[in-house]
Length: 299
Length: 290
Image 1 (cartoon, chains in turn yellow, brown):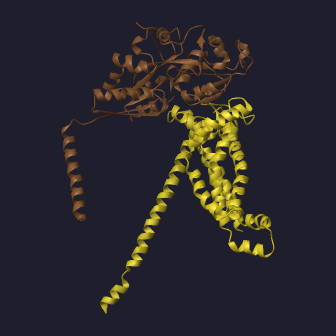
Image 2: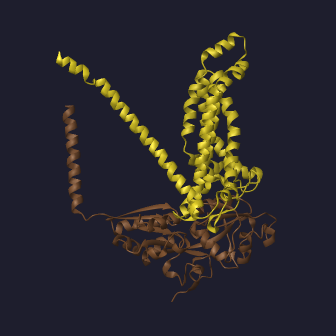
Image 3: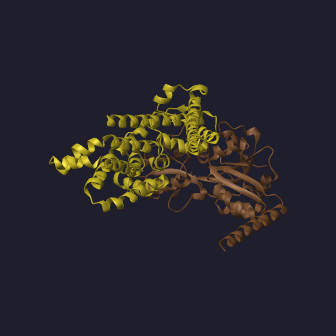
């Protein structure tokens, strides 16, 4: 009798399993949270050093257009503008294409084509950015040079490369969100006598809206943060671009070009960290935007 | 049966490891030297390391890129044995050159290049300065065709650019805000393909697809560099801490020997340090070697 009581009062094997599982997951969460926190704190510390130790005002850094670290001019505005133009431009071109391709694949074409396309798109997502950059340098830049003259380097070349890079990401995410629309919706729409076009435009796209928006923001966030491929084709001139064919520089391209030539702790190195901080803040903003988009769609 | 095979395999591995360990114990310990820095110098360093392996097989040398700034800051912090740089340590912000010892291992000539279709092969120093400060923006102003000049610069802080500006620009002058490229190779590709473009690269990267320029009629040759008639050149440095390991010193001495300088260094189109009849200080003053 006593034995049974003891056994019943003891934690069972299953409950111990539960406990161990909880412990492991909490540890993992703490580790990841700690890592993210450390990165945030580190970047913020390094990023504000320029303003704290080297006497550069934040407003001057964000609004001045002269970037010459070796002569102590730190104006990040040209890079901020270029980063945004490149991102928006490639996003605007990629989004409709991604949408059309995913609608065609999920709603219209036979399933076999989807089975063929899906691994292909996933393969494209996985290609390293340096390959896209090299493609841009050897194919896109010379072509643009022949077409428009000049050097061929610039926002247009960077947008083309980024367009190629984010299109697969956007497409595969849009496909997922379109497939998440319940089959019943399509059947109900057909039952009401709607044509295919009416079903797609009035039922499927509105119900997948949040997913499509997320795909767009995700793709643009990737474009905004891409460094290597952009640096290879944009030309790296720190001026405010007057047209799409003039070479200019993004936040990321200045970072990759400059980091090897500066020494930790100097003003020019701190300025690069400040650029990195701007990048971080922007990607946080992109993330919030993504949250907002998916929340709005869920209502 | 299966168990027996596994047992034999495991036993073989253990015995093999043991024998390897014992024989490794008998040999003198391997010495490690790490070189980090200038990407321009990296191919030459790697070639020298390759041949050094036959001279001193017990020294293991790791060569990494990362840029001159990285090399200097890493050697100052004591993280690596040698920081390779194509600029003087005092030209780099944030480096205390008194803590480091400078070893010059090669001399690199720099030559202005233009697109071959331009039809220009000679400019004066003044014309070059006007182009790089933006006072001249069309080739017709310097005796060429009516074509806008596309200036291509090296990344700010890169050794080649520092050396170029030290000779071409006057004190206090700034070069125009132009396209900046990271490496000799990219610069050469762009100049080859873009009409009206001008840039500069080290001798080692020169080929027939780009047109090298004479300056005031002086040809960019190794011989002219040794006498400073061709003023565009820079040292390739290997910086070490004041006190460094024996293996590090031995490697640098090997790289500076006449034999290596005459074969590997000259083959890579760098200039032999023993041929130099002049020497240059960090602030750009050049004088005849005593």
